[in-house]
Every structure is written in C-alpha cells, then in structure tokens.
Length: 312
Image (cartoon, rainbow, N blue to C red; front, top):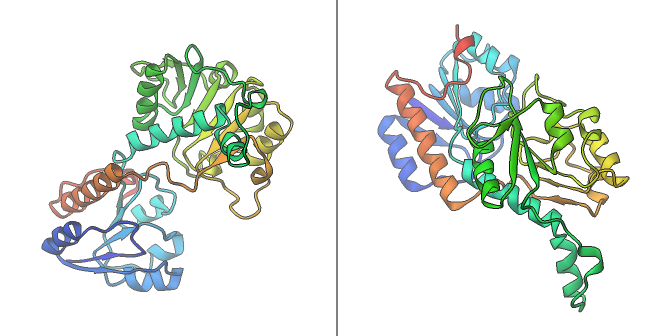
C-alpha cells in the first residue's frame, strides 16, 4: 500500500505521519504541482491525500493504480468527483472538523462589520478618542439571522445566534426541519433577514446561486456574511449594492476574483483570507478525521465518500 500527500500540507503533525506509516509506505510532497506532475505522482499511489491541487477529467483516465482520494477539506470542488467515480476512484472529505471554528468566525465577521471595528481601530491609532458619529450600530439581539444552508456549520451558527438573542431562519435544499431554525424559502430568508450567512458547498450546480435578484431583495440595513466559497455569489451584483449603500456591509472569507477585486475598494466590507476554519482545535480534528477516512477505506468500511453514487 502506497500513500502520498500530493501537495504542501498546511499542518502535518508527527503523530499523524506515524499512524499513516503503520498503514503503508507514505511519501509527502511539499509543493503545489502542476497537472502533469500531479498525474505522475498519483500514478504511483494507491491512496492520495489532496489539499490544494485541482484534479479534472483528463487526469483520472491516466490513473490505473490509484483507488482513493482523501480530501483534507470539507469542500469537494477541487476534484471532478463524477469522473473520478466513473474511473473507479472513491473520494472522501472531512465534513465535521471545522463546524464550530467556522461558526465562531461568522460572528467575528458579523461583529466587525456591524461595529466598524477596522475603522475604529484606525482612528484610535491616529490619536482619536470618543468618536461616536460614524459608529452607530444595531444590536444583534432581537434581529433575524438568515442561514443559507442548515448543515453542521449552519446549525453551529444558529446555536451561537440564540446566545445573542437572535431569531434564526434558514433555507435548505429539502425543506427539512432543523432544530432552532425556522425553515423558509430562500427568497423569504433573503427578504426577512438582518444578517445573511452562507453555508453551501461549491460545485457546478451551486455556482452563482446567490443571484443579483436575491441580493437586491435584502434590507438596506442588512449584512451579508460568506464563510463558504466566493464563487457561490454574483460578486458584481454584491459590489454594486454595497457601493450604493443598498445593503449595509459584508464580511467575506473567500472571493471568486482574488486579484484586483473591486470589492477591495469598499470600506463597508471586511475580508479574511480563508481562515474561518483555522483554529488549533479544528486542525487537530481535521487530522483525526482524515486519518479515520483513510483507515476506513483500507478496512473496506469507507466513510464520508462524496461520490458513492458515481463509482464504477
């Protein structure tokens, strides 16, 4: 059994390496390969751990030995999972490790936008004190938080929101009941909410799902928070609404256009660089979940398989 870590581990503790070495030969690569290099590495592996490298259709038909890809993260958009399945390669993800850390980050962004913390910090550093005019904020208590997606992370956000005294409504694909959340149609969630928080996986069917029409239906006083992928959102429409003051502000942990995004010019937007998940607790849990996925595959009791319905 040969296992490779395909690309530049963010976190790779010694105890994880030791446990994987008990399963088989383990090799770690500390770069981000181009597609030909990735295919070359994958061709000589039975299991691949993947963190950064996009794997598209053309790659999979060249891989005769590879049987399982263990994604480090929750999102599956790096890999064409349908084609991988058709090639007989199962793909697992890590869906649980970061729910609490991401949920807490939602409120870090929400409070930073709501209380204009970045502007306040800047003024204090410039020698200002007891400046009130620009900082009139609304309290979160009694406001409505709208969740787009009510899975593990959405439910963790809801629990924190209740501690702030917020009412929580949410939309999900099936309309299923969720404890502590008033389930509603996505259009109603956008229309009624004082804060929108996005918790949806990114793939071909969800790309651009947050349309200009949905964004335009938000209250002028509402905030938009995205700790999921930027590609879910029509960023041009979001920019226009924020620039024109037709929504109050946004907190974004990811953007679709990384270089030269017009959103960077706006003072009512707060950005973080994809760090919503990144806490000491979450990264340890991530390694544990990843190791469990690999062990389960080897033991022929696979777990967290995201392309089971496509496997040849």
